[in-house]
Length: 154
Image (cartoon, rainbow, N blue to C red; front, side, top):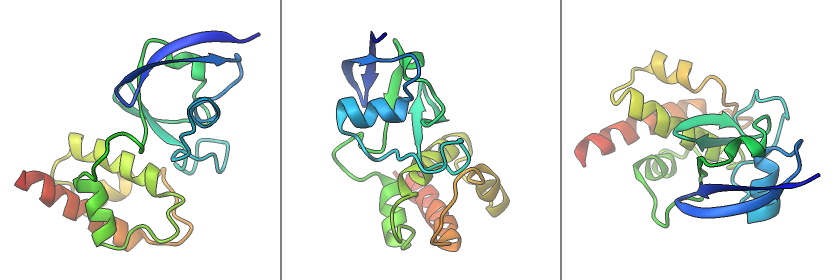
């Protein structure tokens, strides 16, 4: 049995018909054509499905879509211009295959909101739930540091 939910998606009011078992990542893909959050492990362990719900990063593969009712959901597709984090990831070559990049970018944004000048250990700890199969970890850490510098300059 499907039901209608309403929420804000990347700043716009939307509604979707969801089944009780559908995850947020499934609804984002099926109802809205947003594929930045990807299901990879299906267990909330890799970070590829990261989305932001009410200001907090969540694993979209585990987060039931019905829980988004009345909330604010942000994905990597939000905005029409690159932000400091995205620019830093490009400049540092942190993208490689790009499969994990949306999750890393969303987590980096949240990290820098909470810790504007993180050290290497804080970065590693904060991003430990995101896996990069290309092993671009040194470039990712450099991108986080560069993004922090860029954000302090604005």
